[in-house]
Amino acid sequence: MTLVVENLSKSYGDTNVFSDISFALEKGEILCIRGKSGQGKTTLLRCLNNLETLDKGSIKINNRYLCKEVNGKVNYASQQELKVIRQDIGFVFQSFNLFPHMTVKENLLLAPKFLKKLSNDEIEKKADELILKLDLSTKSDNYPYQLSGGQKQRVAIARACMLSPSILCFDEPTSALDEETMGQISKIIKELAAQGIAIIIVTHDSAFVEEIGGKVITLKN
Ligand SMILES: Nc1ncnc2c1ncn2[C@@H]1O[C@H](COP(=O)(O)OP(=O)(O)OP(=O)(O)O)[C@@H](O)[C@H]1O
Ligand SMILES: [Mg+2]
Image (tube, rainbow, N blue to C red; front, side):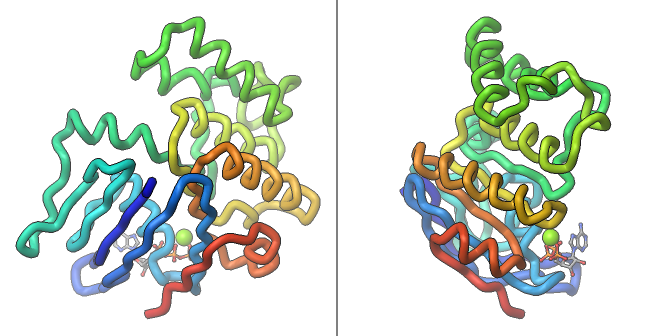
């Protein structure tokens, strides 16, 4: 299994956001997570990406525990281990979170150059391939403010793919898109899944859920 989550629970103070969420995903599987506003969908993705800590539960990515519940306490992996495990999971944020002062290409290069897993030549080559694949060739030297919503989203996807994640999370990927752009994004996501990436999509777009297929989880109360 690429991802196994067991009994996840999270509260902010007295507000219980979600409890007892369990699911598993294999290579290339697509999971849609639905639920009304405020049900904790974004918080769940943030927990999976270690941007937020859990109160209960275990998360296992490619057989390594990001966190594991033992005797009611959640133990997180060491900073060193987290740095490695986190590279297996990517996040395309709802607002894309591109670095505004960097060009498209610079946005792609930043994290891999910092992590130094590949040589600079290999990183450049990979960025060029993703820019081509996501139809951004004419935008490579542009800044985020010069891009359309759909283009920014493709940059965010390309940037997330730079670290070759096994799992890619999308928060409301169609919320800012028209129907045609939605068609493009569903095609891109299906291609990523066909390459073996496990996909998690948070959405309340029923048409998109139907279009994309895969497993569906609905968060309630
Ligand atoms: N950092 C935080 N501190 C306190 N409460 C928070 C925090 N982040 C989220 N919450 C609360 O947790 C609940 C779940 O929020 P979350 O953003 O995960 O919902 P969501 O399902 O993504 O909603 P939407 O569909 O509107 O995006 C909400 O009640 C929200 O107010
Ligand atoms: Mg949300």
